[in-house]
Figure 1 (tube, rainbow, N blue to C red):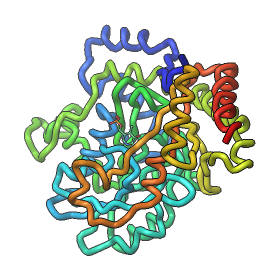
Figure 2 (spheres, helix red, strand yellow):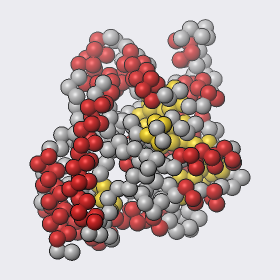
Figure 3 (cartoon, protein in one colour):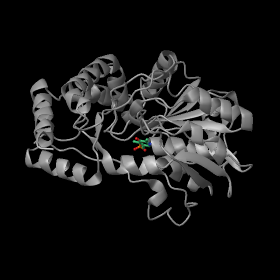
Length: 376
Ligand SMILES: *Cc1c(COP(=O)(O)O)cnc(C)c1O
């Protein structure tokens, strides 16, 4: 059986965890958390980063930082993970769902301006599959209408938009280290703060609404309750795991890009003959090899292909169901049709993707897909 995902261990994770434990400083913001923060700030030009227990938590922190209130409007894609928008809904926001573009599941930037109202506060671009949204256009609109941009960069580690690292462009950005992402810590995430206005308050929100971080740096002589907040910081044990992964980021990325290329080369014949579509990567975007997906022609065809792959011991999975049609939000949605989001929900299929996938396994998966389309 070829599974869909298999977390890759570099071998150092448990050594660093043992070390963190022996330091006897295993709550948040220990030695390994600082190492991870330094790594990201140096490598990607992020103004400041804070590890969190998940990307979901980082997004919730962003919604608190932006003072999202009842009635505020947030523009976000429908074709995304629930946390992208749930973080804002928790604070009372109304989600104005935007369609995906024709070429790939990132948001259709041409549709943004018409959705902006005096209540709009935030745009949340999601870099689906690690492929950048058209950030210049999004930032221009944000400037014009005085809006904030929160990048959902959960899948976008080590990916770029016009040479700028994803996560460094919006006012705030959120990353995930969930075991299904390129770099993992089991559960885990990170908030990136690129706007000075949020630096101080982000620390406070992450520390239960207290100024404990400033206290530990000796900047205040006692700490207390100064704002709202929650416990968003991960244990240093998690950071120790993550640091072992970060030390191997380049190797992991190189391997994943090779796997991606094998899929692309192996399946491009099917694309040329019009049987399937392969991922579209705009010129302004890089590919961080987060996932490899194909687009089938219909839901029915995809269902049969999934079945065919399973019968041949390959586990491929579809992805999101459009959030504007979800049981929770359908009655709150304004009724606009989002054709591309629905099309990706029906036709996108993710193929097995992980570091240890061998060339033989890849050839096998490609041959199983080819055999399915031979008779079509
Ligand atoms: C994985 C993912 C999340 C959630 O990440 P967690 O770390 O599991 O909270 C959010 N948004 C997108 C687009 C994701 O892919």
